[in-house]
Amino acid sequence: MLKKYHWINPSFKRYWVRFFIQTLFIVVFMFLVMLTLIYGSTKHMDVLSAIGASSIAASAFNVFALPSSPVAMPHRIFGSYIIAIISGMGWHFVSPDLSKDLILSLTCSRCLASALSAGTTMLLMALLDFEHPPAMGLALGLVMDIWNDWTLFVVLIAVLALCAIKILLRSWLIDLL
Image (spheres, rainbow, N blue to C red):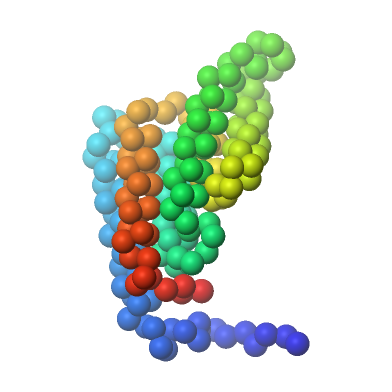
């Protein structure tokens, strides 16, 4: 039997206040992340800052729109970002050697290292039960861009804040989808 499609979420009528409050939470959270990334950096916003911010935004969506989802569990969010950072940094430092050893251009070796970083991150997330897909973007960004410590610091603080918010509001947040 086919499920009836609704243009507006049927839960909206009953929980419309929660829809707007949870949306306000994500707006405030992402505003603070973006301000910290932009004003805390010594230069303009780099590619990694944008990738880190978009990964955090996707994670925030999971926490505020799908709080009961397995990918919104704090240990998975935190663990996946740690795995992504370790994998991304590791492949970032290996990529110049790939161009020498495999006789590839630096661009091609960065692409290969990015793909290997994505594969490594996925494998470790699945192996350690830390599945949280948004963190994969950060692993790719660490390989492809010259990164700074400030961006990694802000991403980690944002991830910790997101986990803390999830724990503190766990009995109040509802699934919006």
